[in-house]
Length: 389
Ligand SMILES: [Zn+2]
Ligand SMILES: [Zn+2]
Image (tube, rainbow, N blue to C red; front, top):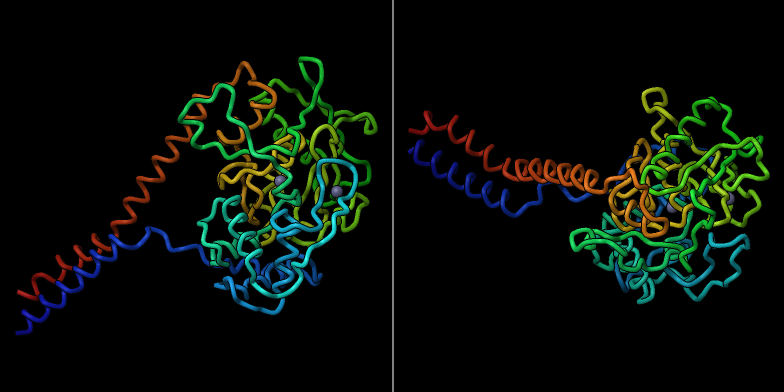
């Protein structure tokens, strides 16, 4: 009898495991990261970043909901271009003066639902129109200060093939501005005097920026050179705190990390309140931000790229703390090459190959992981087999 019941239970267990292996995704849905909770505790400054974290209480809200503080989320969506209102304007030197609309109450109305659908589409998230865990998690992530709507839809690539076209999600600033110089084009850059970070070695910072610029110059026929003549430099780089005179004040630890202006403005500002690092081994802070990743992203803006909806792309708007993302993806390369042409030494095919092999290894890991409940139950079955017969 005992054997029969053990077999019976094992069979049910096996059936359930098989069912789970077929019906569950290989990875659990992304949940709200707790790292941001820890990070806000590190800062005694009540800033935008801590306000963003409070958006976690809107989890699962949808049209018809009324939650106190929802108006702050509406301001966030206005700030980044998803609701009409005051939006930073990175396309010129003037501060945007457009006024806010009636989106200032705490009601989850139709307009907010449309804004969230737009946000989910732009950020490459599942489009649900609700404040699900994925959406909230992305909203509270540190990000670039350039508004997402500053970018116009990208036209078809001039020489793109069908395969590449399906992966194209890059974008440009309105009017598709780019630098115009005689060929071969060289753009100079300089660091703003007295606007550097004192805990980072200037030599190391220069090396990091040189590497970030070289990633872009490897794919387009544009060279970058550092100059000591700050006033004459095409690109001016500096670290600033709070309100620094361009109408887009920084917000303290995390939240907005940096912003840069479209061609041919050349201003590149980083939030001095961040814990910038060049090496995560040396900097153990949970809120540490990789300088090279942000530099590479902002140079994309300086060249004329907007935000991409490809999560892996350098031009994706958000970047988690303690994350390094410096390698240009095909989406970044296609976007910038449509503006400037290709560097004759650059081979798109080799980048395509490396991305394909990465995706293949990822999918093979995924398929192995997705079968684990089945293999687990098989092993259990074999282990229990002698005792049940
Ligand atoms: Zn950006
Ligand atoms: Zn600025």
